[in-house]
Amino acid sequence: MPPSPPCLVVGCVGVAEPDAPIALCAWHLAVSADWSAAHEGVTDVLPTPCLVCGSRLGVRWPSGWLCAVCEWRHGEPLDDELPAPRVDVVYYLRFDDRVKIGTTAHPRRRLAAIWHDELLAFEPGDRLVERRRHALFATERFGRTEWFRRSPALDAHIAGLSAGVDDPWARYARWVSEAIARRG
Image 1 (cartoon, rainbow, N blue to C red):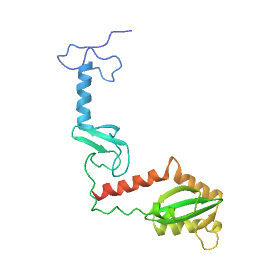
Image 2 (image 1 turned 180 degrees about the vertical axis):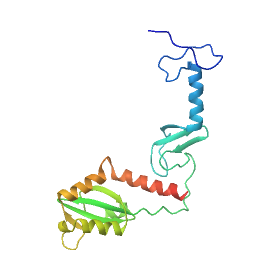
Image 3 (image 1 turned 60 degrees about the vertical axis):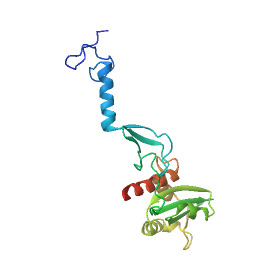
Image 4 (image 1 turned 120 degrees about the vertical axis):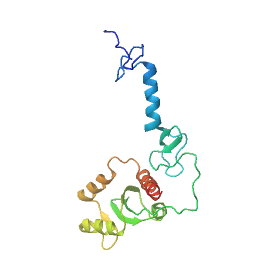
């Protein structure tokens, strides 16, 4: 194995770390990592979950932690006087072999009032999006209700909404935290 090259820093007599992406000695690598962390932040697990959105992912800065999702400064109290932002969603619920397509701005309260077997997906949207979905799947609709027969087209639509999503509630929490972040 060839000897390590010298450190690129002028005047340094150290040798470059063999697996370093840039020919720097261990000390200069550490200094550059510290500089980068101070200017770019370091993504890591928050000490405790974010009080705003529940995320565990944060960015550590020399001045403290920020939630990586909603940018709440870890350790700051929440302003209880501000109302929660309104986030309208279209929801897809399964009961037996049927699917309900509805909308709400308060999904926990609404879904608690509806008998269902499984929450399949959420989609951002209000009554307009809900009406579009009802029209899109009109051939599967039970009368004038919000309940639909399962079909390949409806199943494909729901699969597209839930692709890469293990928990629809986590996605909803992210939308709420993004709305809080946009509000400032």
